[in-house]
Each structure stands twice: as structure tokens, then as C-alpha cells.
Image (cartoon, rainbow, N blue to C red; front, side, top):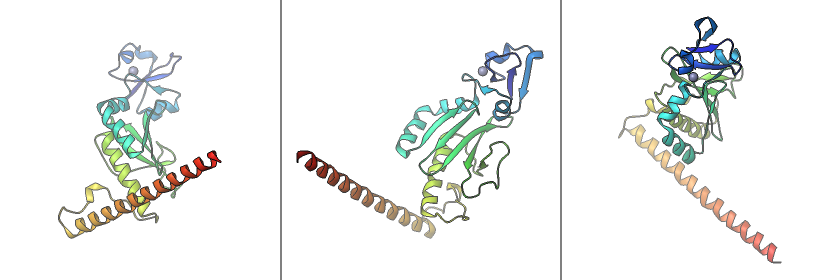
Length: 210
Ligand SMILES: [Zn+2]
């Protein structure tokens, strides 16, 4: 629940526990169920008390580190009170909603544009997976990307870690083999890129010397 002052010029939405919310006169207060509703009425979430900030703060360093190594960008959107997540392949929003300020993952629609649209987050659909923290969702996003890159065909849904085969089973070993092969292909590609880069660099130096 967000508390907004009718008279405020800044138009900022606060949570109940925020010291700014406590100062508000009840007769001047409007309440909104979630940050998106408040946003639609022209308010942005408070930078002190926004629930999404609490989630980010809890794993500040881990999120930073993970984003760097996985090539993900993460940014709080104060208008929507959500965390915007972008990879080179997909776009997401982690939004806070419900009475308990729980976090939910939304995926930007590309193939199924217009279908399955969520009223709360237009242009996105809610992803079924549930994680209790942001890092959990970021790991899901990475897994989703690598699945989609190797399975570009539309329609076959991504299955998250929860449904991974049991360790030691035939399926598990097959998956491990595929994973290893994928890594091998990637490292070969990296070496080829490197050779090409060195080649270009040499060509460039020669050109400069001439
Ligand atoms: Zn506040």
C-alpha cells in the first residue's frame, strides 16, 4: 500500500512505515494498492522507502557482481517502483506487488505481442517462476536467455531450474554433456574472435606504418 499526499508538489508515494507517510494528515492522504497505480495517478515511489530498494539493498554487492559477469544491466525505475533488467537478448521487470510486497518477474513480449498482456505491466507478461530475492530472478533470466538462444523456436516453453533432472540420472548426464559442448563451442568462438582481433590490429599497425 502506498500513501500519497494530495497537496504535495513532488508527488511522491510512500510506504506505511516511512517517516514521511507518518507525517501526512489523513484527510490529505490518498492510498494506492501498488506502485503502478500510484504512478498512473502521477506519483513516483519514494527513494527512501520503496520496497524494491529494500530488495536491491539486501543483495547490493552480489547483484552488481552478477550483472557484471553475466552482462546484465539492472536499474531501479522510480516511476514504476520496479527494477528494470536488460540482457543483450531480453528485457524484464521485477515488480513489487501484493499486501506482503512480494517480488514478481515480468518478461517483455516479443513474439506474442498483444497476447497475454498484463494490465499492470502493459507490453509484458508475468513469468510463472517465483523467487524470494532478486539474485534468484537474475539467475533465472540468464538461464532463460541461454535456453532461448539454443532453442529459438517459438512455442516450446523454457523450463526453469526447478524441473531440472535428478543428479546422476541419464537425463542429467545428457544435459551436462550438452552444457560442456556448448562451453567448448563458445571458447572456440572466443579464440577465433581473438585471432581476428589480433589480425585486424596488425593490419591496422601496418597501415599506419606505411
Ligand atoms: Zn517514503
